[in-house]
Length: 146
Length: 149
Image (cartoon, rainbow over all chains, first blue to last red):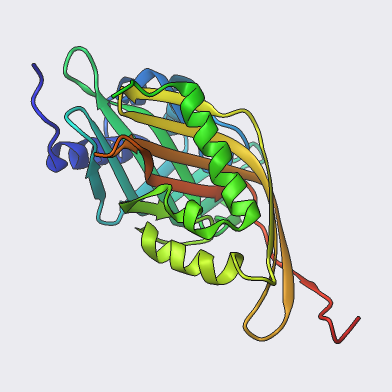
């Protein structure tokens, strides 16, 4: 029987998520999600399947001439029984990528908000089963020539 | 205790919005666990639901306010027999009076909601976490006040 979830385990999973999204880890984002996960990304009008979101994000992270950085605030963790935990926190995310016209697009999400719900799977691994990212203010966009 | 079903959760989400629209404040508040946390749509930080409820009570349940909502289909993930996540898109409209006497309307055509429901000791499903957001920026529009019309 898998051990109860600890807040430290959840914090480690959240940090892993942002480390991958910032291009600082070689792990795959897809591995963090349950196959049935549902995700609201920062700007989508509708939810989508987590694995689909993860694949798209990995493509963006792996893109050439693209850098990103995330800072996360303290994580509030609600343990909901033996195998589920809810992590909620605010964050800032900056990305900088080269556009087709040669310019660079800098995108700064200053007031990001995240809810990630983790559940232990049959093999004892914590997976994201639901995620809702949003921003309390529109991201700041800046286009510059190299 | 009966296992939670998707239909039961959908019915509660409909009840939540029905209470909101009819301004049934007590019934609305009773759907939250005392320890629930929320991200309100316009808040930069998370907060205890009880604080959000005080604010909503003041701003949206008074005589000068009106709320409307149209929900899309509701996805329900049953995580355990006592725990479920409801997520859905919705169109939200609100008209309300500000403390300075101005009246404003807000139209949120692309609202998004996540609500985590857990059965409490009495067997009732309660919201333990909520995240509301808008996929697009929204800004209040000034309405004519009674003296201007």
